[in-house]
Length: 433
Ligand SMILES: *Cc1c(COP(=O)(O)O)cnc(C)c1O
View 1 (tube, rainbow, N blue to C red):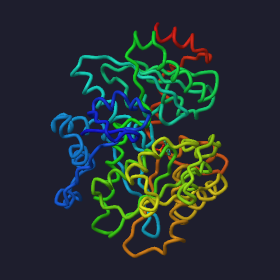
View 2 (view 1 turned 90 degrees about the horizontal axis):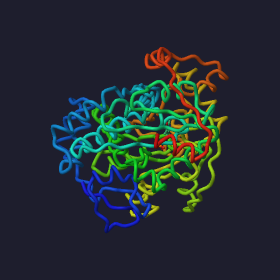
View 3 (view 1 turned 135 degrees about the vertical axis):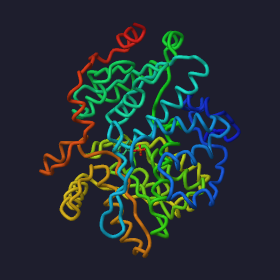
View 4 (view 1 turned 90 degrees about the vertical axis):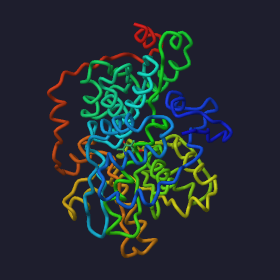
C-alpha cells in the first residue's frame, strides 16, 4: 500500500514508513493513494467466515505488497482474538459490542493490531523503540494492554493523577514488564505537553528511538474496518441496507468505517453521534468548521474540540460537502439527553449502554425522525466501551451491570504506579534513566 498526505497528494510513502512516522512532516494525515475494490465474489460468502477471516480479506486487500499472507494472518489471529457480537434491540436496531477486548473498549482493535504490526517490522530490522503516550483514559488502556510483552517495544504512558476512572487506572498501572505508567500532577493537557516536548528534544531523540501510538496512526484505522465488515456479513442476508451509527470524538472510528465503504463494503449511510462537542454536526449544517476548546461531558472519551481524523473523511470526498452529506449525517446530544437515553434503554430493553453508546442510540431516534424508516434497513450502533469504565453516572442513575472477568482480574494484580510532577526536566531524566 502506498500512502499520501492529506496535505500533499504527490507524496508517496510505504506502509512501514507511515506506521513509524504516524504523521507526515507536513502535518497532514496519511491516506491510502488507492482503495482497491473488495470483490463482490469475496464478500458473497462472508456469512460463512469468522471475524478474523473477514479481517484478513480486508487487510490483505490493502497490505498484500507489505506483509506476506502468512504473517498477516498470524498478526490478525493474535490481534483480533475476541468477539464483536451484535445485541438486538427493538425496531431492527442492533448494538455492536466492541468492548470484549482486554481494555473493554473498541480501541483494543487498534491497539492490538498496531503493536503487532510494529513488532513485525522491528523484528525484520532488529530495532527497539520507546513509545510515549499521553492519555485521558481509554487510549492508554488499549495501548498498555495491546503492547504488553510485545518484543522490541517499551511503552511509557502519562495520565493525569485523579482524572481517570479506577478501572482505567488499573489497566495502566498493573502491567509492569515493558509497560510503565506515570501519574502526572496536572491535567491531560500537561501530559500531552510533556510528550510533545519529548518528541522535540534532540538529546532524547538521539538516545531513544521515540515513537507515538496516537489515534491518527494508519495502523490503528485498518483494524477498525474489520468489525464494520463483520457486521455486514452477519446482517446481509436479512437486511437490504445497513446504517452505521458511530459515537465519535476524534472521528477515527467512523473514518475507518467510511474507508471500508470506499473499499466497496455495502453501507447505506453513516451517522456520527457526538456529545456537546458538536463541531462536526455544526459543520455539516453550516459548512463552517469551527474548532474550539472541548467541553467536559459524561461521554468524556468524545470530548474533542478539533477532531483530528475528520480531514481523512473530507479527503475521501475530495472536500465536496454535498457529496459528503449524502453519506454522513451527524447529531449532538447533551448530558441530560445522554442520561435519559441510558435510563430509557435500561427500562425498555433491559440493557445497559455506556454514555458514549447512548449518544448513538439517540442518533438512531433522531435520524428516524428525519428519514421514515424503510423496511429491511438495519441501524447498527457501535458500543464503544463497557459501562463499567464510567461508573459514576450509573451510580447516580442507580443502574447495575455485570462486571466482566477482565475487571475481576485487574483487582488481583499489583498496582505499580509511579508519580511525578509535570516538570519536563524530571520526565526527561527519568526516560534517560
Ligand atoms: C475513543 C472513544 C470514542 C471516540 O472514538 P474516535 O475514534 O476518537 O471518534 C468513543 N467512545 C469511547 C468509549 C472511546 O474510548
